[in-house]
Each structure stands twice: as structure tokens, then as C-alpha cells.
Image 1 (tube, rainbow, N blue to C red):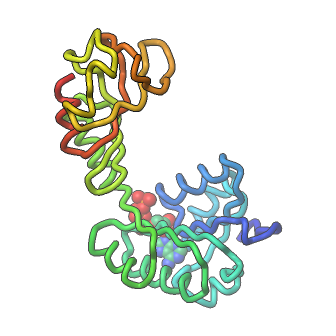
Image 2 (cartoon, rainbow, N blue to C red):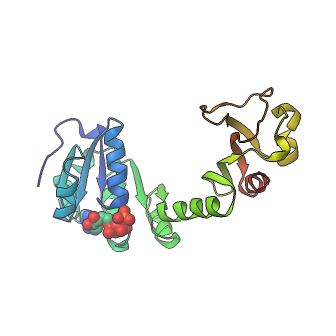
Image 3 (tube, rainbow, N blue to C red):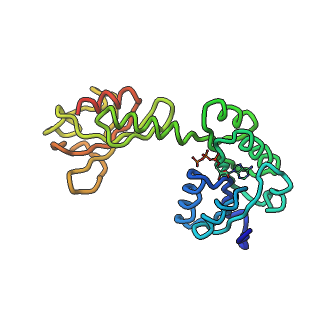
Length: 224
Ligand code: ATP
């Protein structure tokens, strides 16, 4: 089915599984100017995404021969976006690894799924549902407007300036010393974010971008 990559495959990203996550990754890559080959065994999914992606193809990715026919060995980057069918995800990962694709990203639906993918050699495993759930929980319960976990205990958050900082410069407030976090960006209502400077005065309703250990940024945000 459909359009084959004609240009250099090494530059084309292979996205296997065109569910919500795979389609989102693939469409974002296309918007950023990359070539994408989207593969799915489900013909409807392939047809639905054909107008958004550079190339699409119907194939069962657990079948090494089907992957060989799409020229798998020529791709430098593959994203395996199969979640609910863990067996299909693992068999696909194995086939892609055996074909020698150097950079592989795979979505996992839970920790055990992720562990298996890592143990067979997938270096980049992502947990989109778990991440999104964690982010929403932080935003719902705290005073954060955004939460990005950078590591298991480190995060960057967007939060309203705590009342105790209002009227002080960041140097006077000594946020790092008193709260253990760093303010890296600041935004006045109606303005754009700028880099935080020592002489930046914090005003009421300012939004701050704060970096630090998760427990510390949570505590800092709850004081806002
Ligand atoms: P999302 O939340 O992103 O929709 P999901 O985990 O619900 O993800 P799945 O249904 O597991 O998504 O699979 C995503 C896509 O992968 C589906 O479109 C499905 O048809 C496709 N897929 C599953 N198994 C294979 C396979 N063996 N070969 C090719 N595509 C596959």
C-alpha cells in the first residue's frame, strides 16, 4: 500500500505503529521537516495517516521478512509505537535490532514492558501514559501550570511566583539557598518569558520557570 520513500532512507525516520502516540510522533517529525515512513498492519490506520506522513506502508512489523522488504537495514532511526500488544512490540523491537538499526525508540505501557524492551537492547524507552499521568497529577494538586520530569528526581516546572518573593530581586531572594531550586525564566502577565537575572525583580502574578529536585520544586510551588 501507498507511497514508498524515494529519498535517502538513512534520513527517513521509521515509525512503526500508527496509533495515537505513533501518529503524533510521526506528524511532529514531518512538521519539523523530516521524512517519515509510517508502518502499520492495519490498513485503515495507514489510509487515515497517508495524507499527513511522507510515506506510509501496510506491513506486519513482527515479520523480519516484511521489514527486510521495506529496506529496514538502511534506516538509522526507528520508533516502535506499539503499546497494547506487548508481544508485537517485543517481536518488532527484536527484528529492528537484528536488522542493525542504530537508534531505536520504543513506547512501553508499563514498567515490565519497558524492562523487557531494555533487556533486549532498546536503549530509549518512553512511557507516555505514565508521564502524562504524573504531569497532570502535579498540575492538578499543586500550583504548577506545567511540569516536565527531566530525570527520576529532577524536574522543570512553570509556577506562579511565591508571595514571599514579590518585591525582591532574585539575588535578594536567594532562592537557591533558601529553597534549593533555581529560577531560570520569568514572565510578566502579557509578556514573553525572559531569562532570569540576579537583578530581576519578582512581581505579583509573575510566572517562573524553576529547575530542581522534584520534592523541592513541589514545595517551592506550593508556597505560591
Ligand atoms: P496509542 O495510545 O498510541 O493509540 P496503543 O498502545 O493503544 O497506542 P496499539 O493499539 O497497541 O496502540 O498499537 C498502535 C498501532 O500499532 C496500531 O495502529 C496497531 O495497528 C499497530 N500494530 C500493532 N501490532 C502491529 C504489528 N505487528 N505490525 C504493525 N503494526 C502493528
